[in-house]
Each structure stands twice: as C-alpha cells, then as structure tokens.
Length: 76
Image (tube, rainbow, N blue to C red; front, top):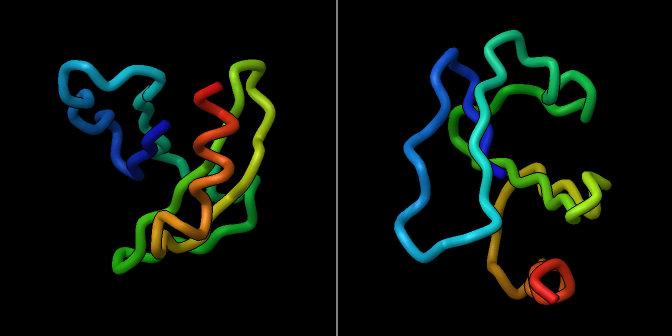
C-alpha cells in the first residue's frame, strides 16, 4: 500500500506488480493513528496482510534486508 499526504493517490504501480494499493491521506489520519510525524525526507511503509492487519510499520525505509522476511511471508 502506498499513501500520499495529498488529495490525489499516487501513480498506480507498474504492470505486473500485484498486491499494491494506493490511497490518499489528506487529513493525515493514518499518520496520526500510527503516531508518525510528517517527514518529507523519508518514505514510510506500512506492511499489511490480506486480512487488513498491520504486520509492521517502517517509519523510515532502509535496506530491504531489514524487512525482507516480512515481505516473503506476506507474499506467500
């Protein structure tokens, strides 16, 4: 899932990439719920399973190895 702070959702993922959803969060409700302050210099990721349960919140994306196991489990 990708989230933007504006009223329009981000561009759809490239063809062939499945399982990603886009949404807009103009009022900052998701950030507030997750207790994350806005940071224009950092990308935030919220990993969510198929049932909608938040698996992990990454306040600042780093090396993929940090969360690769979560991605593998979510893709299974």
